[in-house]
Length: 350
Ligand SMILES: [Zn+2]
Image (cartoon, rainbow, N blue to C red; front, side, top):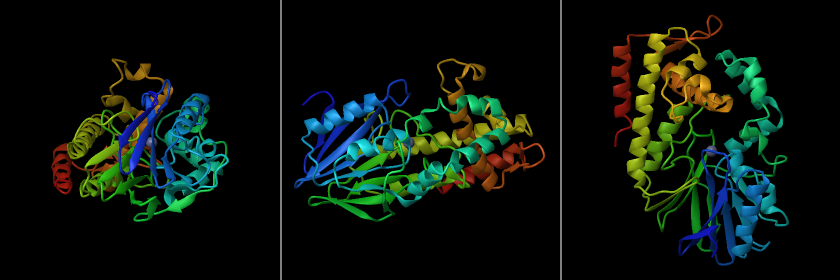
């Protein structure tokens, strides 16, 4: 087998096709291929760009994937997962599974309303209209999407997809996207973690139009996955060289630190909007200052900050002063907020 493909597991046979994502901090997309009894399930595809397509199709050829009995499962709507939905299924009559929730978001994107609403929300948070306009067109999130909306075979929590004699259960894990889904095989205790749990980078949690509390949803989904009996955890990006349960605790702790940092920034700069709060947080950007951040990195950072601010707003620690300054203020002393956060955090403990 070439370097493109790694055999991950036997019975069921699982292969990983290493799809490169050049100039992207994620580095690669792990496309998993499950095969049994003449049936194939492909999980995720890579961006809709030539370099990804070449790797994906070369991987398919090497694995001898024909046109019959091939289905595709998209863990979530992001373009690095769904971008090649058409290319992967071209000439085949299989299904393209995706969660109902994420598919509805893709429909909103298709109708043009999703990005407009997102842009307005960012502008309200102090990201200027000029910045939004400059960014549109250079953001890989909308540049490498599938050419048009594909027909989705829509799944929900608990649905089962079979590959030969093996069953894979859909476990909904909202947070990273509103409708992200993991796949789980109970006999072998194999979990495809998608972008819900990544091992050497922290999954991006951001603001979503029509989602009140994406970080709260995400933390609940981490607790949900912690209850699952997992022997093999297969992430969508890079590699996994650590215990999944340890990693879950690390990610939960990371968000606690982040929330405390967010509270401190709001205390220090009352009525700051999301962009200003984001500029006060620590980001691992190889020594760059906020002003030196590339525009799209700022956009991601603001989105992540908004998800933390929303979490604090929903739980009554921070107010969002809509219509006035559009900024945020603390509703109690920072000491009280931190104590409250500690109490909330106990609910995430094992
Ligand atoms: Zn993603």
